Length: 185
Image 1 (tube, one colour):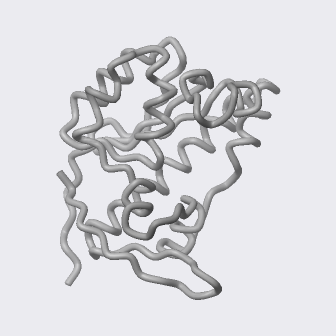
Image 2: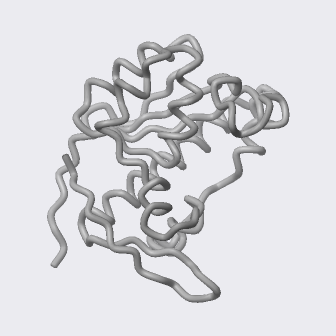
């Protein structure tokens, strides 16, 4: 049976100013710099936040009971920590990180694109590397639209998991089911 879902949280994703080769690798997300973050919540819809908004973004995220993202605990919050050092302490307890949950259940990482295609029938519109190039080329509208698309995928994947108790992932040419126990609030 499909549950009716009333979501009262916020979904977040961000794009960076630098890539891993410039930041000393993926182990140092605080060196990447915030280019743009996009949030979505039922009351405000989509909103954009830029580097100067990092503190306001963190305050906004902390005002919700639930924050949803993909790889936010390891990466996005690490990027924000350069601006708001206690961001993890403020947000970790209220965060659902889809990638962290998938990794904990399966023992390996599955990309947002693969999860979304298997579960929702649609995927990402570009890559983080492409977004970084666009940002440097001054095509900020393309980066914002790309980040907005990732937020929509993350939101829809999460809401699918809440409503159905499962999401799907590809494995060796098969579509596999992963049970999740997420709640809307």
